[in-house]
Image (tube, helix red, strand yellow):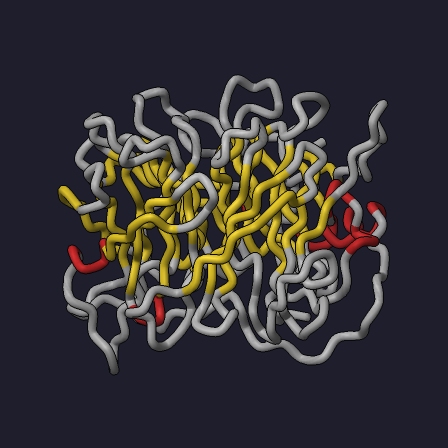
Length: 429
C-alpha cells in the first residue's frame, strides 16, 4: 500500500486570482515512498471526516458535505474493482496500475463506454484497454506494452483519449513515458490493439539527460479542437526545462496523422505533474484545463486562446502534491461544468475524491463541494495506503439509467503484490 506524509487539507475550496510564483526547487513526485501501514479496512465514518475537515478548514469556511454510501436503485449497482484480485492481470509489485485512467468512449461499438488504464511500474510500463459491460464489469481487455524505444520504464504514467484522429471509427490515445521523455499518439483498432504510433515528443525541444532532466509527459490532457481545424489538440506537461527555465507545458496542435502542426509553450511557477481537461467554462468555444503543482501546491486553471497561448490563469490553493484532476459536466444544476479532484493522502492514505461546480472564471461555486471518501462513498472498501484518487476519469452513464459513473485509480492497493494497484468504477451520487 502507498502512504503519504502529505498533510490533509481542503483549502482548495477557496481560490483567489494571482500571478505565477517562480521557484527553483526541484520537482517532487506525488508518489512519495511510504512507511509500513497496518492491514485491514478501518471504515471511515462521515462524522470523522467532517471532524477532520472542521479542524483544518480556514476560519469562516464551511466544510464540504460528505457523500453517504449509495442508496440502492431498483437494480442495485455496486462499485466494481479491477485488480489482480478480480482478474488475471498478473501485475507485479510496484506496478502502480491506475496511475492514469482515460475514458475512451465506445471503442468496440457495443453501446458501452470503455476505459484505458496506465501502469508505469509494470515492467517498462503498460497501458491496458478494458471493454466494459453496462453493469461495470469487464468483458475483455487488451494490453499495450511499452514501445521499443522505451529503455528506462514509466510508460503509461499518463494517458488520455484523443477521439478518432484518423477517421477510421476507433478512438485514439496519447500515452507518455516521462523518464525517457517520450509522448506517443497511438492509433487504435476497435479491439484495443495498436494500429500505428507516432512519437510526438520528437517535435519538441531536445531533452536533456543528466543534471536538469526534462520529463515530457508528466501529465496529458485532451483539449478538443482548440484551433478550430477539426482535429483534437493536446496538453503535455513537462518537468525541469532544458534551458534552465521553470517547468512548462505545451499545447500541441495535431494533424490527423498524429504529427504536430505547431505548439505553444508556457513556463510554470513550479512543477506541473498532473493536468486534466475541463469544460468550456467561459463559453468562448475553447475548453479550459487545470494542473496540479508539486512546488507551491496550487491548482492552476488555464484559459487559452485559439493558438494555444494562455490569456488568463486562476489559482486555487491546496496542501497536496500534484492533485489529480478531471473535468465533469454539470452535476449540480448550476449550468456550469465542474471538476473532480483526487485526494490520496486523506484517512491514513485510503484516499478520496471531491466534486465541485466551477464558475465562468474557474472559481469553485460556494456550497457545491462534495467529498467522496471511497467508491460510491464506501470507505470500508479501502485499506490504509490504497491511495484511492490517484487518477480520475468521467465515464458517463454506462447502463443508461440511474447515476453516472467515474473510474478512480488506487495505486497503493496490495492485491496479489505490494502496490500493484487497482481501479474502481462506481456511481457519482
